[in-house]
Length: 266
Length: 221
Image 1 (cartoon, rainbow over the protein chains, first blue to last red):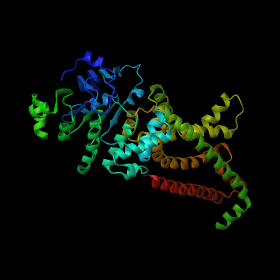
Image 2 (image 1 turned 180 degrees about the horizontal axis):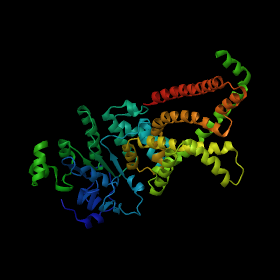
Image 3 (image 1 turned 45 degrees about the vertical axis):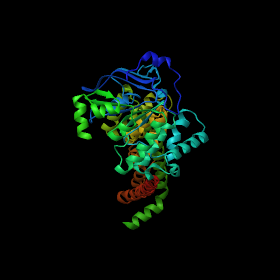
Image 4 (image 1 turned 90 degrees about the vertical axis):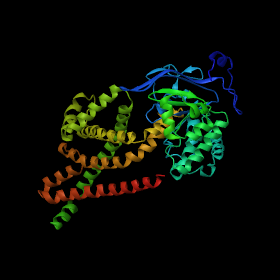
């Protein structure tokens, strides 16, 4: 699945949503990305790209750098070295307004991180009304339609402490969607959930994938990764050991570490 | 003894009420000003600019590492020398009380802000919120619930500390005691009256803070 940058570039204007667009435009490109925490090297020289509408799963053992890699994509973690291009712009460039850029990239966290002092609706409307100056009424209307989409409309005036873990995570997802991002990053979205709630969250992500959203997801849900992904990356020791289609990774992995990991978890 | 106290109160109650008024306004003024200054200091420390951080640390080190009575003397001697306008003793002492209390308030505020889960900030950043919006809309509203109860205790300490102003004959309750004591030579009864008034004052405030804290907990959803 090699992509020719040139043909990708010529096919600009691929903002077309709805049915899955052809996977040609590179939306995220990572060049020689490295990240160290003090002496600990977490990522070393990663090159990777994610195309518009693509669903990419990142799997691998804990401490392999998966989350750090994901957090570098919206600069929650500042890379030590290398470049991250989003929509053609190098967001590591100091001249780039990273805050502005983060609005184009939604993120969902393992620990939900919903705002406990705001109601469900306010959780969704706060960023659009404050940062995009969207009129309150319009933002609320949109929040309610998003809540309806994930089956939470009846909770619209509740506070998050009245929600279950699965409901909190669904709220976190639509909160990110309210900024109308071009891509969504999921950092182990179901790892903090009780088993019976994993399904409801995966359903939402699956729907999102089907709608043509570009998604990068760090997950331990191998079945899900296999089902929804266009591509799977196996990370360990701060590098991408192997990348390919779900079938390539899950059926005929070549890398020794990948094979070992998969035999442990499958 | 009890009779003496009653008689003393009967005769000199206006001296104590005058002192009580002094204590109340000194406390209120220093609480209000120290809250503002202390919050400002906390923000400076959390600004991420190392020069500010260093300055505030030095400030905290000095203010928390020396006796408050020494600080009162320092301001009482030092302020009039540099002030272009004439300063009353009361003003010098009030300034010292504020400067001292601000140090403690800033630590309470800083700790309260830092106790808010970092995930809240990260979520807000990932939504593309600006730093000031993250601070004032996401972090501070949650920090207030950590800060207010601790700040209440700080306020009660501040009320009791205003008694040190009596060293400089600034009008407040302990100064009233000294006035009554030197007029009557009834040291113990006049002291007990002052003590009782302090007790009433701090008890009322403690109860009020309890009620407030319970309401805060109730609104925690």
